[in-house]
Image 1: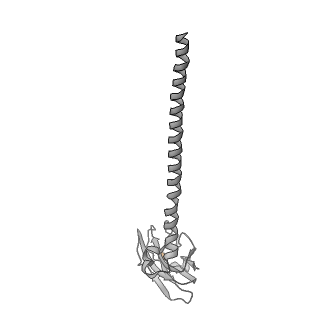
Image 2: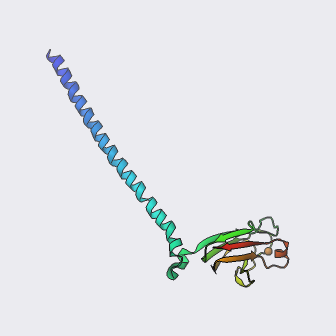
Image 3: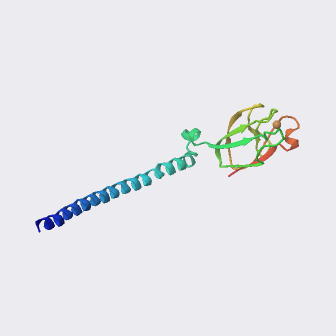
Length: 162
Ligand SMILES: [Cu+2]
């Protein structure tokens, strides 16, 4: 009889211990899930802030360098007289354009306004890439290569700035 009484008591205390352990686990689970959800809520916030900062800081003169938008263009790597795109779009403001020329011949990237005045150009080079920083107002620009014959052969495109 005593052994039978002792057994339920033992089961009860074991059950209580398990319940406590489960309760502790549940608490720990709550704690970790709430802290991970709060850290998950926290981490996207700086990311979206960082993403929106360049756009909103673009009009601020002091931060134009960090707020400069980045564009990239490449010459056809097989040596065809064209770029990898014939149209680019940018927002008005400062833009940094990376021009990559993996073609076996020299090219450059020149940008001119619709009136034909050159607003920026990379040197003529072969291999690697060069960056060009230009200030763009809203409008339509042309980008092309000034190596003789290249633009006429199709090495040009339109840059639309909004
Ligand atoms: Cu060229």
